[in-house]
Image (cartoon, rainbow, N blue to C red; front, side, top):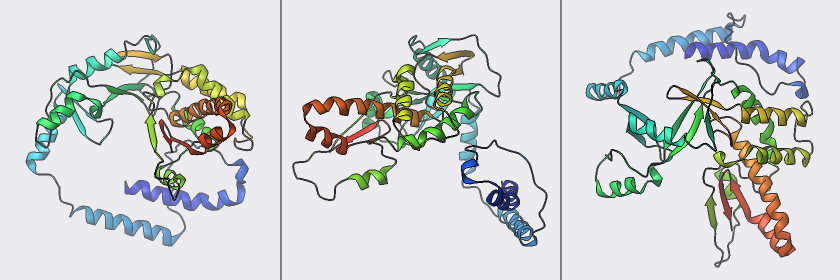
Length: 339
């Protein structure tokens, strides 16, 4: 870990002045490929002495580090790790740890993949370095059986072998998948467009800033979310939505990129979603995968486009109502707020 820190210090020293002098702002690359190049020690004595001192101190301090687990706890964790009959996942919400019977988990995921409208088995195979993996995060917060067990069991952990109503959030994960770099690039391109969506909320602080300082006693705050947003966006709708924002915003997208390139890249990411589960490769036929970099920005623009259609339709109810809706409707990803 420290060697990487020292490497980054030397790289910053070597390239900092070159970047400032030779690279104009408009010509800077949007993304850079990762490099494992290790620079030699620099001629800067102060920098090298600092790196040497930090390395020495870190090695010395590590000798005094004490394990925060007891021997019994370490043994228990090792036993869980080596137990092939179970699988351990984080919960979809709440930071809980869920330990499941491996066959129970596998059967539930395979049941999800039986949805022929969304998935199909494919003979296209990817090598180990570039294939994505499909997994599910258990939605324990939406299981009535688990909620009842929590109420009945006064314990630090809840034991429930096979809850029949437990659902899973589908995730396609693969940092080295064939489209991940392109998805990362398109995400950088689309993010500035999200700021053009009238309802867009970046985070909780921005939401608080939108709340009025005084509220009428009769006012109501309404909130609701969209069920399975990412997996319910048809490709045609998604591409139409992104095209709408590309054509109706000015000076937002890098002028080095054409609209045609952005849309073609988006189409490739959506249609090339191939993943692996339980010895089989699958192709996701519709929607986008949770796990690909551009998914949040893409979904934000799709909902923003649908909201534009809603605003236009609501103008038939009167201009005052349409203006009020546009001003008071705010949204963070799939959660909408209306005051």
